[in-house]
Image (tube, rainbow, N blue to C red; front, side):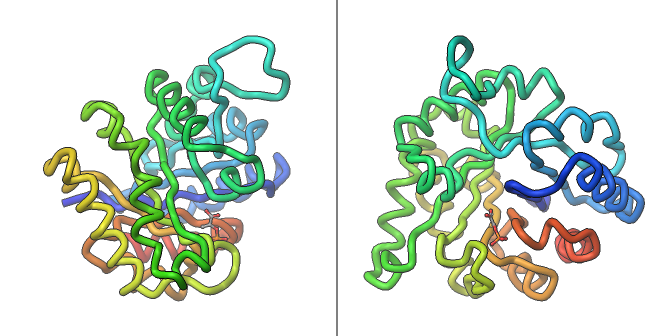
Length: 250
Ligand code: PEP
C-alpha cells in the first residue's frame, strides 16, 4: 500500500504573515491520525519561519519549489539544495512546467538539480506532463516518456527518494482538470516506464496528479489505482479547500 501524499505548491503567493496563518489553520484542523503526508512548498523566505511552527505529529513537511543547479559560489540569486536542507526542507519540486517553460530549464539542467537535491538528502517531487497541442496530436505518452529519461538515469537508491507528479500543462491553473480516466491512464503508463528499470520501485513510487485539482474533483482522482495524491496549486492557497483535499486523500 502506497501512502497518500498531498503537496501544496504556493508558487509566488503568500506574505510571511499570510503563510504562517494558513499553516496554523491547517495544523489546527487536520486529524493527527490520518495517514496522509502533507507537504507545504512556500517561497524561499517563508521556509524557515514555517519550519519553526511545524508540528511533525500532524505529518506536515516542508518543501521548496525549486533549487539551484549549482552547489555554491558566484551565482547571484540562487538557492542550493544544501542550503534548503540546512533550513529544514525535506522535499523540493523539480521540473515544474512553469520553470521548464518560463525559465528555460532544460533536461540537462533538471538532471543537475535532481542529483544535487538527492545528494543533499532532499526528496524530489519531479514534474512531467504534456502541452495541449501534444495531447491533441496524441504525442502525450511519448512526451512524458522522454521527460522520464532523467529519472531512469538515477540509481535505484536515488529513485527511492523521488515522487513523480503528472501535471498536464493544459490543466495547470486553467480550471480544466484531467479526467480521472485520463490521469489514471497516464499514471499507469508512468509506472510501466519506471518498471523497465525496476519493478519493485515502480510499484512503490508515489505518483501524484496535478492540474486544477480541487475539493470537488480530488476524491475521484485520488480513488484511481495509480494516483497516490496530488500536487495542488491554486486550491492549496485556501485553507478550507486544501483541508477538503487532504480529507479526500485520507
Ligand atoms: C501546479 O502548478 O503545480 C498546479 C497543480 O496548479 P493548479 O492546481 O493551480 O492547476
